Image 1 (cartoon, rainbow, N blue to C red):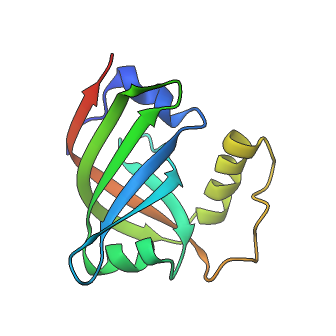
Image 2: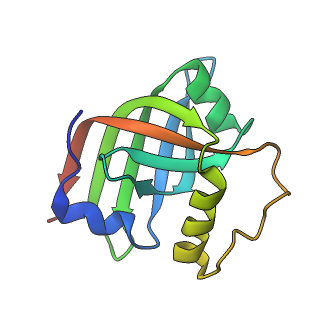
Length: 134
């Protein structure tokens, strides 16, 4: 596991939209803009609903990529390649509510109950981390 650079941790504390790349069953890439987070152990976290395409893809192929551009300077970014170590429902609702606070300034995620499946956290182990612009 490669550590996330301390100088770029602010990207996980702001309204940063990341690009999350997974592999489709036919081997083609699928990229989705996502809210992004990191835990205290240095794993990258993506919260989604079970049965969305990205969640289905990581169950089949856990190798992923994440591009995290600074919203104020897109030439300052993190590029992460890694592997999904876990897809869990544990803490997923509290996590999406915390992200809603950051991204929407709301206490609760506004779309509870509208999803195609229950909330899950995709926990990504960073194996290769490249940074630029700082």
